[in-house]
Length: 272
Image 1 (cartoon, one colour):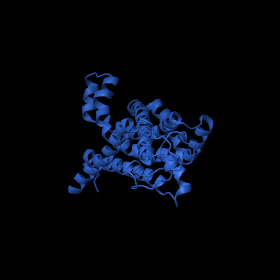
Image 2 (image 1 turned 180 degrees about the horizontal axis):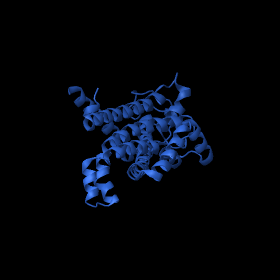
Image 3 (image 1 turned 90 degrees about the horizontal axis):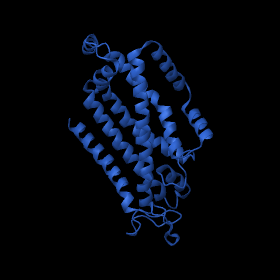
Image 4 (image 1 turned 30 degrees about the vertical axis):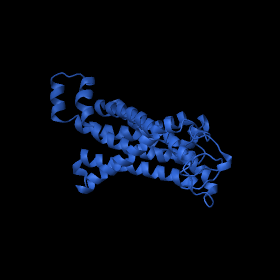
């Protein structure tokens, strides 16, 4: 129990602190981390108050770029999960509740998408539509709704046979009201857990795609873009890559801790 409490506290502190800093960066760094000072290029961290985390090869403040870049990574993570979860929940509810033709059609679409290699989908989508913030979010929604659809569909198949659902059906409750008041509240818990864990995964995915040049526009500060910019300076200016890497690690760690804590709270029988 003590570890579980510590897990929750660490998750809240890490995730909350990063969200607060990223949101406050709008006022702390109104220039968006793009201001250049060539006279201060490659300044080492912790050597000056004006650039506490150092500067990059163009004299841009690393702290400002890390916090401003967090806006993009967190936006992609939360927006893509929100879109994928809504789409997956709707499809899973329809497939699991109505069964028959709709279940077969929707689940075959899920099976086909799961059979395709993820990297092939990513390369095809991005090569046709290009990178960019909106396209990355759309790609993640399209590629990840199947996880939510399968989870919700499986749980709906169990819940729809419960006594309270049968009783509501006997009283003539309409399908929409049945789904909204009796089915959805009983399947949403595990979905929230999956959403929390997927936000962390999508932050890593966005950073990886941007690092490879397939994600966000290089002119827009992002954690993956900073990693890519600093890889050629690892021996002489390690801080350009290390600090955005630490931001990714701490954010993902906090979200994973929260996801584990939520899993144990919502499904205590699943504890190991």
